[in-house]
Length: 271
Image (cartoon, rainbow, N blue to C red; front, side, top):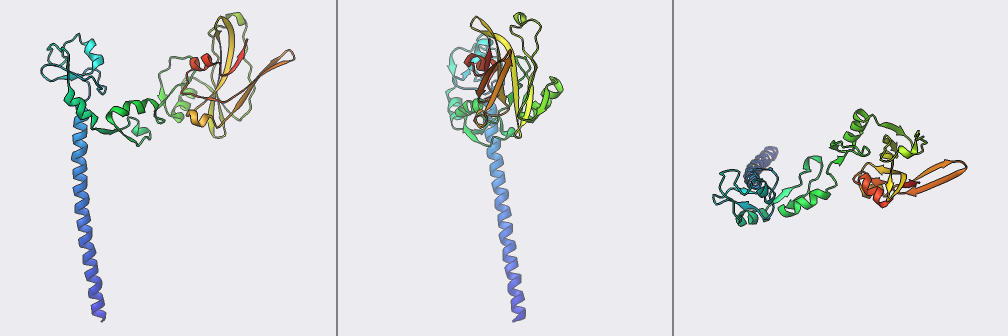
């Protein structure tokens, strides 16, 4: 009986080994199929890349008599001449390629930043414009800075490249000194970043015009999405000569430009 028991265990072990081998073969086959499918999709996606601007093409996709394609925006740039063979383009649409694109499902371009969603080809562009994983623009006031990135990258950038003051805590007091208020129009003061509740906020202050009236405006920006910004509130006060002006509001996301916030007067406006 003991020998039979050993034999039974050995046979069970052999059976398991065979099953494992079958699974390995199946997994290898699935990987090969997936690799071919991925290669095919990448090949088609490459065909949908405009040879002039290298962006993805969307209808109407133009083609020359020899079958070379380009996007509608670049057609005007090349003066109606095919950039590949120099033939006259005319008004030929590549309907076949447009149909192929309609059947594709591809990942968001911000996949490396954390977006794992897959979209039909013609829906992807609309999603990417609103994707919550898309990089943020540098929020430094009215600068022409082109740096983009996630919040940690922007914090390093603001500190190292713009020498922004970083401050911890939920209350603050700052002086904004000016020698001649009449010469302050379009002036901006350095951004201040606060680390509060484990999140970061930017205090913005500038001189501008609302209509014909010269004013100062101050508001708080949340370094993150608008949906998260609405979880917080803040108040600003300006005082002097026995008088006080108070503003209470909700921080705006750094996705919003200072001009958009100014136009909506969503901040402390000081005549």
